Every structure is written in structure tokens, then in C-alpha cells.
Image 1 (spheres, rainbow, N blue to C red):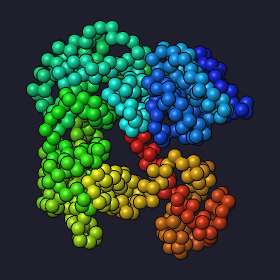
Image 2 (tube, helix red, strand yellow):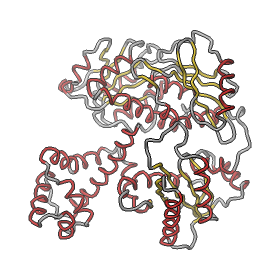
Image 3 (tube, rainbow, N blue to C red):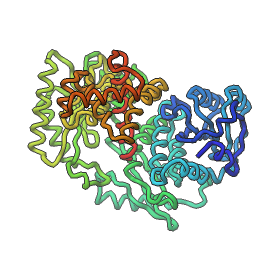
Image 4 (tube, rainbow, N blue to C red):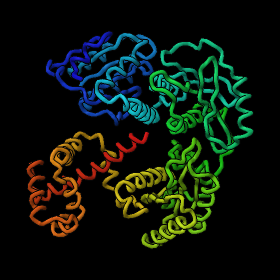
Length: 548
């Protein structure tokens, strides 16, 4: 779909014209949706950006536009979420100064159909729901790092992206927030007493279940998800089950984002949610980075008898069923199995602190004089033991760097998580213990993934080679992988590839012709190594998107 076709859409007006009319001949290849300020990491150069301004202050609206202009997007389109908004003259002025095409969709009760129509033009219809879910995830991550992080705004996001009625209920089953796609007022009284009784009866048979319960009202069904801390339920999220266009709601996706609602309710309703914190809750708050005040963290660390300044690292033991067909709304690994695995890990590492998190065990390990090789040997022995005792499961471990204090331990948790995700992509056939030290450059590149310089580096090297392979089947990508794996030792590379030395040289010449660089240059070698690592990262991101 070209930009000039987009510009002719009904109810769309152009508020700011571009400096070059040829821009209307550009193809729209990517779309991003923005609702709140932040680093907008998912917005890329040349994107068409849809933006919702209703939930932002005037000051933050201007900040968002400045951020988008800095990313060199192709155009921006304002969607009316709640009602028709009056356009800020400062926004129009900024767009005019930077020659950014600015559109405004005027019909506030039809923006969903409009957005769906545009998406159908640039992607396969079957991929639209996955795209919308990913955009919702991106906006939630951005929201969490702003002063807009509040349960009501989360409800707005879910309703906006999934186009469903949403209700947030207290643990006493009182209505806290309601949101509908067209921002209609609640036109009927929810049968909350009836639902509460149904829930009580259901809990008798399912006391530990994480499944959503299904309520019905006026020929409509609702999923009701409990919002649980370790000790109690603090509320419920109810969402319309069926959408006329997207079909049934995916409960797994909602379960993924429940932690955001739990955190927002804890932050905004502290007086109602005071409860005695367990050691496990304290450690979870440390690992998830929920302590914003270091003084509070030091006080709680002292209360639970931990040393605040002590080198520690985190390793995560991930457990997955070998039979992937067996799925349920609950944790795929039964709690009894998780407890037994945790007990075995504690026997091997009795000085560590352990937590159970979904289908994995988190271990906080004090760094001492024991050599890394010996620790890796103990971890491998633990894996061997677990594989014997639980042959129906697959086990892998991600290990972080060490950090000097309790406040920084959240970074160790992020390191270990990243090591698991990236390590399983890169080394799944060769090992099951992934150390962050081996993936440090990958993580650095991952954190810079929206840097346009890296994007150009990748497109001018690896992407060109992969496109050539798709057309010619010359196995250049496979060859380059092996050459880099062999540290540019060509003798070892052609032996590993089982090809003649002359065939390898011919492939190298083709690679050099495609990228326009000599592979004898040390700078070219570095560019190709970085490009290949970026390719690994893009594969991880794409697999994550497809999985959801």
C-alpha cells in the first residue's frame, strides 16, 4: 500500500504536508501504534505510526511527537480513541517544521475498522492478531516506565488493542474500572453478586487454579482472571470472551500480562493491599526491580537478614515438557514436580536462595572462591540427575554476571533470562547451560536493536546474503556461519562443510561481490561477525512474536 492510497481513505484529513510530494509514492511496509511516552523502542525508521493522544497531557503529547520525529518515521496518523480532540497548534507547528506528514482520522467510532483495513493492505490477514498483541505488549512495557502506569490505563490499553469490554474488580467484587472500545458508559448493572457466588463455588473444586472462570451475562461471555500475589487474590480482570472479527480471546496471552495489573494495583492501592510480606515476595520484588527506593530496600534486606553489599549472581533452571501437545491454562509443570526439582537443587546448592516462578526455578548464588569450572560441573551434574529422575521434561540453565549489591540484582535476573532465551537459539544442539559471559556482545546489540546504524549494517551485509540465497540457493549464509564459527580458518571451514577448497573460495567471492567488501579486511570480518549476531537476535525476536 502506497502512502498516497492511504491518504485517500474516507474520514482522513491531512494536517501537515511533507516537504517532498514524492513521499506519497513510498510503500507502507511497517506500522507501529503508540499510546504513551517512553523510548518507543519498537518504532523504526520509515514506519507509519498510529498514535492515540486522548490519554496524554498536552506536554507529553509534544514529547511523543519529538521522539517520533527523531526516529525519522514516514508519517503519523492520529486516532480518536475517546472522542474528537482539538489539535494542539504546537504539535502541528513541530510537524510543519520537520516536514512530517500528519494525518487525523476524524470518525471516532470507526477507527478499529480503519486500522484493520490498513493492516490488511500490508500484511497477511492471519498475522494481524499477532501484530496487535505484540503492539499491546510494546505499549505496556513503555507504560510501566512512566508516571502513567496505573490499572485504569492498563484497562484502556487492553480494551483499545483487543477491542473488548474490560472490567477491573476488587477482591470484594466491586467494580473499580470499566472500559469499552468505543468508550461507552456502562449501560447495565453487572451481576456481581451472582458472579461472586459462582466464583466461590468454583474455588471449592479449584482452590489453586490459575485458569480463568467463564461468566455469562445477557448472552455475552466473559473470562474472569484472578489477580494473585503469593498470599491472596487482590482483584479480578474480566474481559469479553468473543470478538466478532478476532474470535475467542486467547487466555494464554492475558495470563502473560496479568503481572502488570497486579503490580499496578499494588502501587496504586497500597492502603487496601497491606499484607505481611514473605521472604519469597521480598526476593521476587528484588529480582523484578520493584524497589524504586533504595532506602526501603536496605531496610527490608536487613529485616530478612541478608547482606546488602555482597557479590551475587542468578541462575535460572527452566523446565519444559517434552510432549508439547500437553497444555492447559495452569502451569505446564505441576507444582509437586516443581517442588521436587527445587528440593534437589537445594541439596546440591544448599547455601543458595531459591524461588519457583511458573515453569522455572530461580537461584540466587553468592559468588565465592569456587572456580567457575567447578560450579559449571555441579550444575551439569544437577541437570544429569534431573534428566534421569524426570525423563519427561527438558532442562536448561541460564547464568548471569555477578553484581555487588541487592539493588543491582534485578540486572542479574535480566541477564539470566536473556542467557536462556538467546542460548537456546544459538547452542540448543550442543549444550544446555548458557552463561551470560558468552553472550555479552549479543546482549549489548539487543539493547541497541533500534539503532538505525546497526539496522543499516545488517541490511548491507547479512540481509543481502540471505536474499541472494533465497533466489539462487548458493548456501552463502551457511558458508559464512561456518567461516565465522571457525574464526576465519578456511581449511577448517571447508572441511566442516564437506566441500572442495575451490568451492569455498568461489562462495567467498560471491559474498564479497554481494556486500562490496573484501573478507581479507579485519574491519569486514568484524562487520560480518556483528551482522551475524544481529541475525541471531532478529531470529529470537521473530520466534517470540510467532509464538504468541
